[in-house]
Image (cartoon, rainbow, N blue to C red; front, side, top):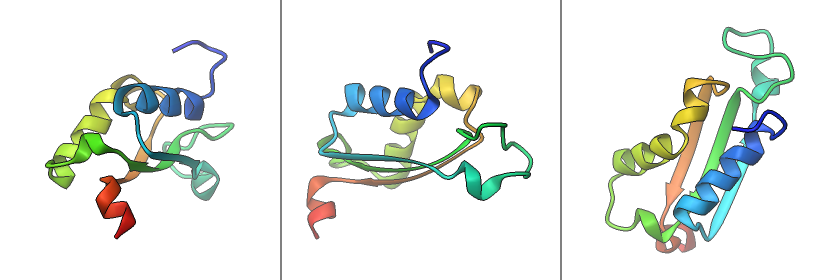
Amino acid sequence: MSGDMRVSDSIHKKLDDALKPDRLEVMDESHLHAGHAGAREGGESHFRLLIVAKAFEGKTRVARQRMVNDILREELQGPIHALAMKTLTPEEAAA
């Protein structure tokens, strides 16, 4: 990951490239965890994701999360302390 790219931008780009999602929201919730263990100066440690992608069709919730974790392995080993995610297929999102 290049030093000048923000963690949220990196997350967005990697998920966008890998999953081609219909909808992707990357929310930095680090401010909610300021002062807690794992919170970094400047934030960008706690994220919430909303991903709507056809790639999730036919996969369990756990399998979907594993896909996302694999895509973001680098970030999860480094700056990301916590990652919450909602993974939906386009049909689920429309329901």
